[in-house]
Length: 380
Ligand code: RFL
Ligand code: PHB
Image 1 (cartoon, helix red, strand yellow):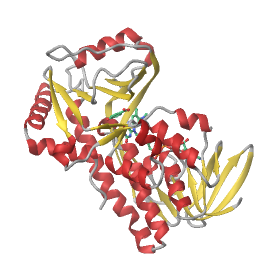
Image 2 (cartoon, protein in one colour; image 1 turned 90 degrees about the vertical axis):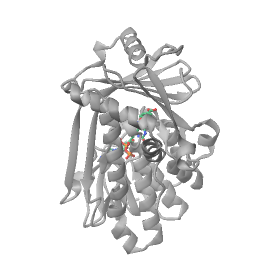
Image 3 (cartoon, rainbow, N blue to C red; image 1 turned 90 degrees about the horizontal axis):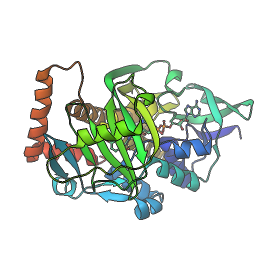
């Protein structure tokens, strides 16, 4: 195996889905993944699939378990001023919804469906955008893979973007991070709760009827040692406090991590034979639940272009993908700014956040804008 049509670097959701879409169209491809299968299948990350993502997974035959086990959600709750406000997705968006189905499960489903070569513990060392060659290390030896096209789906820290001779990057770092936990306790809510509190943001999400996923905004230099279980639950209680008889159920914490937040875009997403897709090209803060969905949107677009064989579609990939990327960047930065507490923030800014939240909850126009971005704007 030293030649293929499409060499894919990275076996995360972007690389695996692209490989699957190409397999189905009979286009030879090889996926190289630096980590082990167990590692990629258990890495805790995203939980929300927007309507387009659900449609794409179903259409390519990867949606069977998602349809059995995923939870369709018709809204989210915004919580601030000790009150709850529901955003009704189908009512505001002509029937669109989202699906709660973990990224770990999407990855497992795609690995199980894989027909073509998928090499774990195969680390790409370099990608040549002109020659179309990937150099990689597998089982202690170095190899070369010659490709008509290379697609770097190797995440934010991958080698793909660094192999492009000229990229412009746009970046924003935020003065906060998310402490995320997984807990063996049924969710205390039927829909996700996005909470604004003077201590900072909190999010109640879920993985299944018996597993909760919760997040707290913390400082980027904070560490897990500062957060014994009691403190995490107490702080979640404080931030979700609401008038009325709602209660946050506690349970054993089975996974925890702190993730910094950033916004990042690389332009263009192509150089010669090398294309970028997913987190390799862009990062959004998780407040808008868009990262995984953008990765799926990129590879759907790119797979269509590759399968069509139409050079004009390939030439238009970067511009078309970036249009959607920047919309999601705006939405994610907007949600982040509206909900998070910057401790250096002046009281004026805090009042502006509350004014925006109250307006969003009270105005059909503002609520519709939030809802249509959250469920995902339709593909053109
Ligand atoms: P990934 O998932 O990072 O996969 C890249 C893969 O490339 C491999 N790799 C290499 N392989 C070979 N050679 C090399 N040199 C390589 N370098 C790297 C890596 O091992 C890895 O397997 O990128 P991809 O496929 O673009 O997928 C992107 C998504 O994973 C990401 O956007 C989301 O997880 C972001 N995200 C969320 N997105 C959503 O849509 N909804 C959410 O609710 C949501 N919540 C989240 C999130 C991300 C989070 N974290 C931890 C960053 C919540 C969190 C906390
Ligand atoms: C998650 O369930 O992990 C999740 C949900 C919504 C977000 C971010 C993460 O905005």
